[in-house]
Length: 583
Image 1 (cartoon, one colour):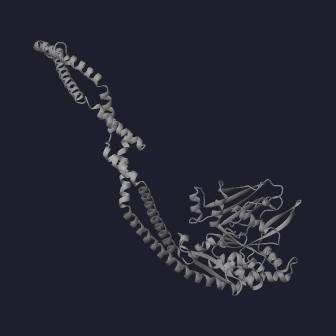
Image 2 (cartoon, rainbow, N blue to C red; image 1 turned 90 degrees about the horizontal axis):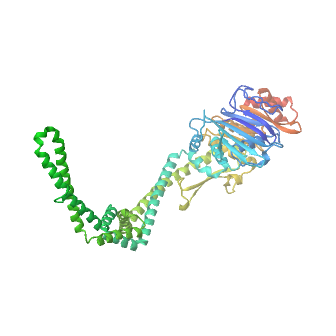
Image 3 (cartoon, rainbow, N blue to C red; image 1 turned 30 degrees about the vertical axis):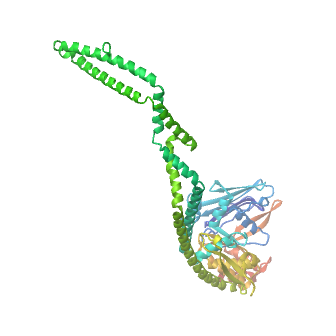
């Protein structure tokens, strides 16, 4: 709910702070040196549920207040809003949001923090017409302000493209009125299932088309890779083998030198170690345990030399066997290299490449069956969506009839007895079906008998439009009780019993929500639980708008003024008392 509105340098308002949180008189007022502030808000504020009325003579500045509020809610910035001589203007609207208010999901989506359930929307306007927006003092886009504002407050009659005037909202309003959300959710779920099934089939068809286009290449490539049959780690093994064979003579020369140094019958290491072992063996008994470590070490060294000699002999034997294999190794090595270059990959990736290409070929061979299965799944998903959509459409038709009858009952007391309200439900072409269902829904009106209903914003005009919107709002009162409502001159052009009916419906609408109405009707003003008077007064060389909360006696005088004009008579006061008492 709206709890306060602070305005700085907007047209005729230099400084104005309206606090609507239900404090005692004067508890939240900010009186500036020119007397432009709010004098006090009574024992209940507009932040509470109930009907708050703003009255004042034509041109006093009531529209400026609504323009200011609209600016804070993200409406288009206009440099003409800036007060003459000011460098910048600002408007701050503060809301108290309940625990499950829809605004929370928007704030969470934008990673914006809100403390103590207080949401502050602030907009600053510069001389060049540019504006900056803030949500709880965190920079934000004006579009975010509009999204938040749509969940917080609705202004009817002043901003024609928002609220009920936006036909895009009518489908959701009808579903909410008919309590069709479960059916609507089922349709949305079925729509996603159908779209996913169609996407899967289209993706498979695309992959198959690509494979068919490249089929000849794929078959040739798979045949080549199958014939080559690359092995894991083969490139590294071939590189080592090739390097060994390319240096074969040098390796053999080194091996032979090592073998001779170990096995030479006269000066080899093995012969020397054997001699040393025999020499120690002859004195082992005499030397005792002191020679035991040396003897053991010589035994190990002799064994190691014999093992080294065996390994060298084996290596030399392998080299002899590989004498003619360099050509074969290089042929295999370069074949792998050439194949890797051809496919722009590493040699070790050739195995995976073959598997991928083979899978694409398999998709061609089994693709028709897969496409058939996916097409059947998509068709089944379409039938499921269509069945859910038809059920929702039927329920919408029934809800629309109930809505039309309920609105029709509200029209005669509002002096719209010759008018007709109709919920138009049009079946969409399949290309226009969506997660919202099969229907286009629009609220239409006809103001004269026999005339064809048309869009509510184009057929109705002036006071008719405001009263149509009021009638619909009264019927839809149970929807979105968290959202505050503002009506701008909903009683335009009516009086007497019709104005009384307007006031009665506004009061009824305010039973479970915050409602604010700008009015020229004393019958409507008498229904208000809180009353503000807007006045235009001299302030130096300029005029300034002043807003005053009216206590009971002042409220009586204002309603009497509205009844009698400039001169307030005792008869007008008595009539005001009767209106207030009847309310």
